[in-house]
Length: 338
Ligand code: PEP
Ligand code: MN
Image (tube, rainbow, N blue to C red; front, top):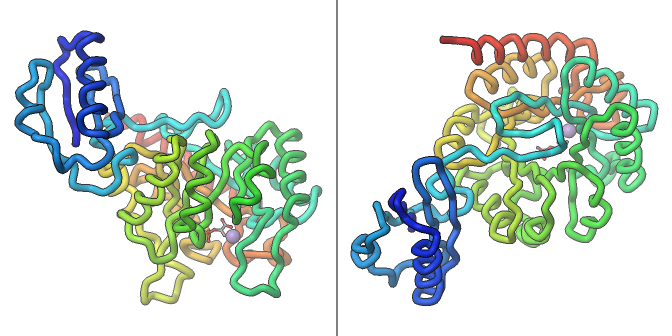
């Protein structure tokens, strides 16, 4: 339930009203302060609340029920875009375009440092690299694990780029303490125990869309993290399974404007996993920016032919430089249009 308060509401009236709602109806009250008004979002079982009684209160401008099952992730509860601060100079959702770039897997210090330096030069603001890898085959390279996290930190030290890397188990959270953004991969989008544990941290979480997840299921996974008290969620559209098999997945580009309408959370797009083909990364990245994505996550490898994972969809640093130039030219053109 959403309650919009009149601009004339005093602090005391607000406190009394909020306490009454909590005591009488046993709900949580989420407050959002806008320039024009204050919006209260009620979370919990609101079925017994008499909407007419609320509407009749002096300080209430309007009241309506929210049908969607996600509340904290719902734009109705938080009309402004959420801005997720990563470092003093990098924020996601503030209107800028952030590119996360780097290899699928961290393979060695030389590799991750070289790629980090190259992508930074080409405009990436965040370094990606998998240390714990979710592979379809148990016989495939599983990642360098804890050592991979240490190598990412070396690359961060060398370049100043914050790092994003995937977590696969709640039991690893302590290992990720010094990571800037924790990625929840597509395969773990509905690992609810993991989401609940991440909700207890204050880390930015990059939540990838599940392979077969609807947008509502994806937003409900964001809700799990937020319900625990961590509002720092960034969504990532990375393609879904359809009957088309030319590409690895089908990029649901409409998810970008749909998520923007339904939620206040930032959304980035992963054209690498969406397509599985390096030559498709540029056009898909361009379409994501044109649709209003807050960022991109792109796989870049110094030697894609010998990559230990996802070489076919990885760009060389030179190719990434070309794609990045086009992406920023498009973003500038969009920002400067009259
Ligand atoms: C990845 O980013 O390397 C990855 C495994 O992605 P996804 O979870 O989208 O498949
Ligand atoms: Mn990958």
